[in-house]
Length: 238
Image: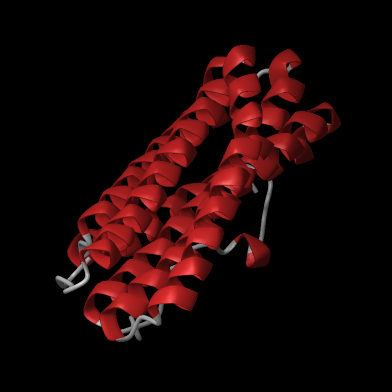
């Protein structure tokens, strides 16, 4: 936290809150890694572990919420302290959603075991790597109260969107070429969207960290390249 406090126990509570969020971030980071391993390596064990981790992430979110409520009631924080405490509450919500998306990826990986990922595998692998890198960065930024690292995550989300757009078009093309591809490609589309949303939530946390530390909200438009809702998809060669 950015300032020292006369009451030592209050300082310890603020540090404990930050540690709890970093610990929750580590749990979610591990869950996402397991989900990515499940889809890319067809790893049933990793898929099961990713799904089993979800209730633990939810429980940690509830623990942090109760901790925040106690801090607000007993300490009546102001200024920077209040920003950090409210930011903690917002960040845990984003982390919980990331965990949900990871669990969904893991579930869909089990359905895809009998299908070939075709060339979409390389795009998914690249996307998964970028998502995991951003997630690690933002957890580090939370632990270090680092607005510059948070801004790196904020700016790099566009690359994830660009990969998602390419995958979207590729998978739609496969479905148009052969109706037998519809089932696996639909699941792959959902998986890609879940990874893209994980990137979005990491960006949310980046904005929260920046404001908590600096007191200045990010006013410029968020760099986004997810154009799948407006995609004009054409078969290859047309």
